[in-house]
Image (cartoon, rainbow, N blue to C red; front, top):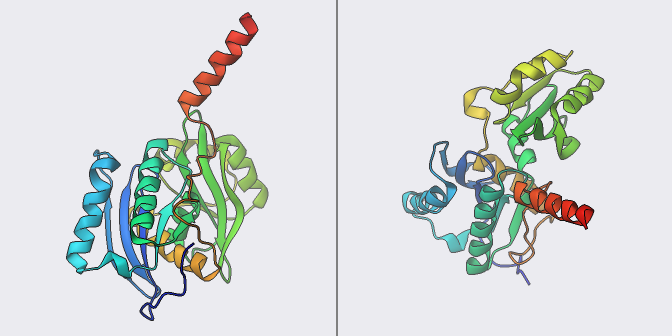
Length: 249
């Protein structure tokens, strides 16, 4: 059981992690401000960067991790290896600190970078095989999920957006891969997020987690599981082998 009635400071504090894509990002956020954020988009693996980044944030802010209220993690979809690293780190922290976890859908967190944006927001992460992990969002009075995160063919995504008939802003690591294709397929006004807003950021995950906390959308470290949305390549290959073996029998 998680004790949410513990005494704590008046200001909620969330430790947020995102290693779902090419970017590794760690942040500490409160309801009204970001205390610290460390984001790296480079060649090193998340297993090399995530914990050292967290350690550096703790040192620089002179923070006692025991004072945080929850650990938020971008829980998928995304890189299978990256998700496992992020989830394992979040679970370990949750268990050690006896804190709840807040599972933020990766694409939702990515969309939250564009808070207040006009029109539709469409994050796209490259899922290979001409597919993207995506969702469709907007800000009216609040952050609104028009279509929840999904794995979908690029042409099918374009059909959905054309049917909605509104301006759309894209962001995510799928943009450089599919930008030209999307521009050809779409018949609505298209924009692309600037560099400082177009990749995963743990601060956005953390701020969205504050909203989740207030809605009671938390889980224990034991309960948390990443959401892959589709099978890994190894799993697909295994199923194909098994199917072939059955056909040969």
